[in-house]
Length: 117
Image (tube, rainbow, N blue to C red):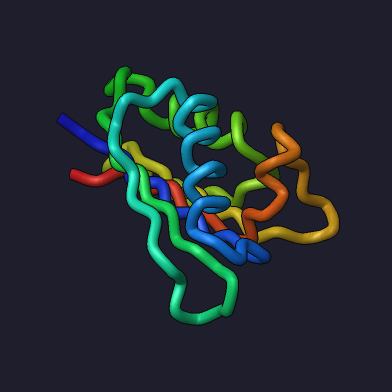
């Protein structure tokens, strides 16, 4: 069974409770039952790292599922395609063209979506 790992870095979050709230909203949007972790992000003050790990539902269409899931949060994402493994890695970097599907997600500065074996 394959799993995905979604790592999100937030900014301008001066309490862990605020980061927890963003994580719970993302969990809801992704329709995920998995646990997530929230920890202080050591590189920036008032930043948190949120991590989700969840099973891929549709192994045959894992690439499509990856794109669909990440688009529920924000866009655009950079995509790296591994044809041999039929997998993708997606990276989001906040910039002036970023769009957030929920107003609460605008604290996301960076994210990485990767399928694990």
